[in-house]
Length: 126
Image (cartoon, rainbow, N blue to C red):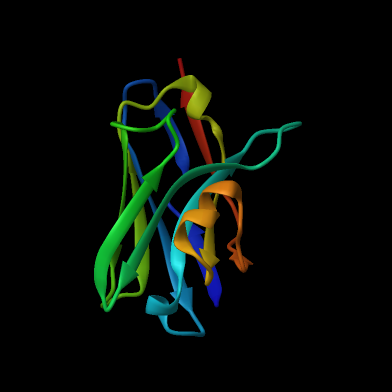
């Protein structure tokens, strides 16, 4: 599956951004979809993921650092997932990547993936 992320930009602390990730190539419903982020010198870290069974959202997963501020969702008609980011903090500054994973959904939290999209830069100023 091919992934195309977009929506990054510059925002002040406390503001909001919405990232999008469009999937193509294989059935969207075959994968758990997620978001990761990376800053220079650090490993890529899990942010959020969404899985579904029979076209119905079955689980969402969030890193503790974003719970209550970020919301992952999908539009199955458009083959797009979103990451709504509210109450942004300077420490949320990173390159954000979307990922697709065809295995056991919870394993994406540990970094399991089959495909990466290109990154989109989010910068939060203080």
